[in-house]
Amino acid sequence: MIFQTPEPMDVELEVLSEINGLREKLRFQLHEPRRWVGSLRRLSLARAIQGSNTIEGYAAELDDAVAVAAGEEPVDTDTETRLALQGYRDAMTYVLQLSNDTGFEYSEQLIKSLHFMMISYDLSKSPGLYRPGAVFVYGGDSGEVVYKGAHVDSVPTLVNQLVEELNTADAAPEMIRGAMSHLNLVMIHPFRDGNGRMARALQSLVLAREGVFSPVFVSIEEYLGRNTQAYYDILAEVGQGSWNPQNDARPWIRFNLTAHLRQARTMLRRVRESERLWTELEKIAEQERLPDRVVAVMFDAAIGLRIRNNTYRAAIADHEEISDATASRDLGKLVDAGVLASHGEKRGRHYTRSTRLESIRRAIVESRDPTDNRDPFANLA
Image 1 (cartoon, helix red, strand yellow):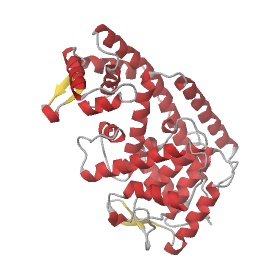
Image 2: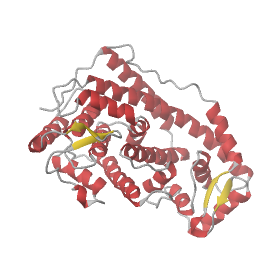
Image 3: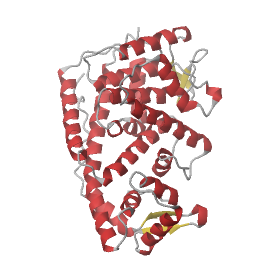
Image 4: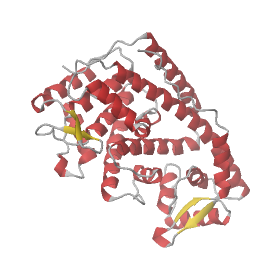
């Protein structure tokens, strides 16, 4: 037996309806092909990679996550963090590919394969293989055991039950199906390491397979990374320290719906602000007689990313291929125009936004409406 999906209550259906309404607005905003959408998609994938790995203690700056998402070398991360980011990028890229696979089926081997992609940089963690014995999750500075996974002998059976449920037609909304897949996998804890990352990737896969548009824009991994303690707390509340599939999963469902609601609001705000920022940057490019392609790098710099020659070329690769020399000339022109500031020399050279870009970005941020972070379930038992 695995955790069972609770029947949605009216209040949960109302929150689902609100989320879907926000997503329809987001779909409308993204319907027309615009250059800034590609930049926003890259950043959204990078934030998902960053968020999921932050939960596991692999902290990286956003620009390093952007570099890894683009297949480039990060600047400041240590080797283990870089490999963890790259592994998760590979798994998430495969998840996005599978969203369009007409012959797709969930399988035990698929779950193992995704796990291998994430953890293959460390063979001591048995990537792609179930754990050989008991597994414990330790928490806090005291190092006390806060969770014990399902008994090792039951792991294959439980994962197969999860797979069977995922392959069965279900009337539950996709956000609830994704949340339950996440809960069951992380509670089974079938692997030595990487169970949380694997569960979050599986949730994203369920959303992608359920026909959710642009899965990168609806992932809640960024939200979970920003609210790690609340994420741990709700898992502790539902799990009660060990494998207890008879427990009520409703608190977990409500936590996930709240995450989807808040993330949808964040994405809609980012879409609107991205369009406004891009328009302002196009005006600067026209005033300074700069090529259109530099707007993408100005966009990244304006939101606070460090820019390098290779990350600039990666940012515009979907639209235009340029040489290393051309990229260097473009970046030099941006410095001369007072758009970017240069730091370091030769291979260590990177660029940041100038006060000119910073003021544009600040004006957009300061004009935001107040953030609505109300808990939609706050007054319910």
